[in-house]
Length: 467
Image (cartoon, rainbow, N blue to C red; front, side, top):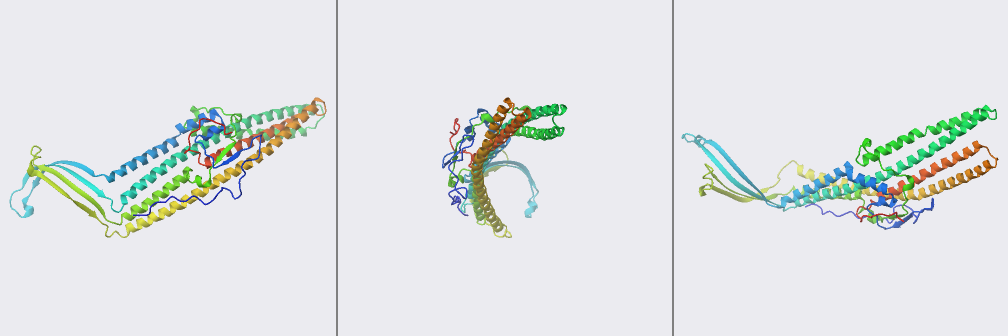
């Protein structure tokens, strides 16, 4: 009874974006990222960043995160429920022992005889077997199997989300540390410049207004440090939580921006493959399968249920005489139960099951749409990240050349020291902008691996840098 589940077809699209994504990004910082259409992802994709410390943090999180442990326990629970469900296809046997002392009154049958008191000892066994003629039990098992599939996909999704969050947090932490160091260097140069200008004010060669301008710039720059330090602390606390540790009891391994290599060869699954490998899509499909099975269960409930029952046993007035032949009894026969009138309850439950299926189907479609949008965002993000990094690299190179020229002119006596410090500050700020663009490119590279499903179905790669 009920519909047989058919997996939804993959969307009839050949690409993720409206216009074709180039086969590679532009070269930025000497590196272009290549998109391998149809190439396979590896399970431990974070190894492509070529950082042993990053690998340590991710593996620590996968082993200790409570969310992963909860998902694994839910999967075990669903498997045991499925195994328990299979028991309906086997005969159900039970034994019963009963010993009572009773008083019997013949007056119940119109006799004037006095009542009698006696013992009754009964030992019996019963066997029943449900005949699943209309398939309700088979559909129930199908629903339990779908629940196992859903929990399995949930475990995979938990692994994927956790590994992606850990990698992103490690990148953010490394970037915050580097930006704090650079900002502190700029502050030191600003303070030195203020000291020089104050001496010029005392000598009467510079107006005091210049000092006020520099102090205002310094104060604004110093104000950026507390938020950066707060972000750094939050990233460390988040990393501890993701790894299943208390912040006070765990020190994260040190990972610097220089330790993270940009993966240059990025596998991009075909759209037709994405719906068969993203855990959230597989979970939505399993939920749809379960809803389909529930229609069968609700439909079968409208029809009779059949059970074969048998029992046999012995009874007597004492345990010693329990197995005498005159105390035996048995019964054998079918049990048929058929709904006759229930106020429309069963029909309404079937309609509710159909509505549940339509809801699950809509959720599945929404999940697929969201997944394709996430891949499209990641692909375009990498394309634009390369453009942004290229622009920041040019700005950094220009600032570096300007600083070099200013140093030469200073040595020749053509410019004063404050002018040299200004050029140095501009160079340091260009370095910060370049650093931020680097971090964004690394995080968007993480996003493409997560968007494509993380490669949980593929063999584990031992090591590599993706080149």
